[in-house]
Amino acid sequence: MKLMYITPEPEIAKAAQAAGVDWIFVDLETLGKQDRQGHLDTVISRHTIDDVKAVRSVLSNSQLLVRTNPLHDGSVSEIDSVIAAGADIVMLPFFTTADEVNKFLSIVDGRAQTCLLLETPEAVDNLADVVELSGIDYVHIGLNDLHLGYDLDFMFEPLINGTVDHIASMLRQSGVEFGFGGIARLGEGTLASERILAEHRRLGSNMVILSRSFLNTNDSAGLQDLENLFQREVQRIRNYEAFLQDQTDGFFVENRVATAHTANRIVQEIRG
Image (cartoon, rainbow, N blue to C red; front, side):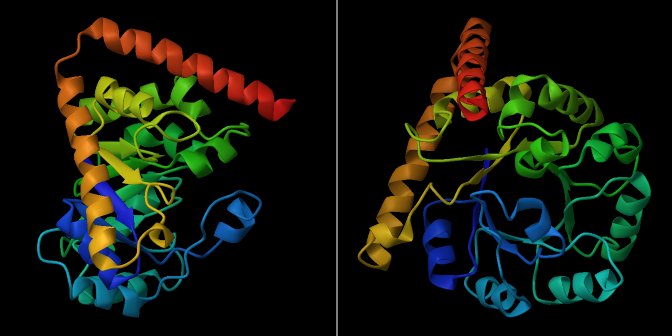
């Protein structure tokens, strides 16, 4: 699995890199996000192009992923700046049509790898046309906005109601690498991270974000402590990946049933 961690802090980026995190994620997206997610317990980043440059300066093994804003009048300038600052991968969020994606790919023009953040029902509807385009390297399924777009109550409902299965099937057929959502530390999370990682394996996903609950930087006394925490928790994920490789189909069927049961219980609790 490609593991992603969101941070604008060079020292934290170095600690994540030392632990084997594959992609360090700097998030420039602000347009429309407050309106969509302001009522949720989610982080709306205020990262800057200077953060991109600072994080780039400390990376040697991990790749740098930068999420831009959705397409807007300033997209050419923004994407040019992101690439000039050293982004290895540029992510387009909140797209709806193949035309938008095509414009994004034209702006990037092969100067960096591309990742689409699929997080709108319209994007799901248009995915067959999107995957026909040349130049898409990765797709990440964003469960936060996707569940809002479908007027659902719980972020993981698209995972249990067949939506993510449908998307994953199309992406597997197209040959585009993909991932979805985020995970907390193993043994933690509203849905246990072990359950979610098994769903990644079942669906053929190979990308996941380490969520803000994965590592509370306030838990560490210093950089070395932070590195140790990262290394321990990332290694636990790698060990669990190895465990999943040896499991039979029956294990993943049982895990899906258990995951759906827990998620449905959470939905009922939310609805009261």
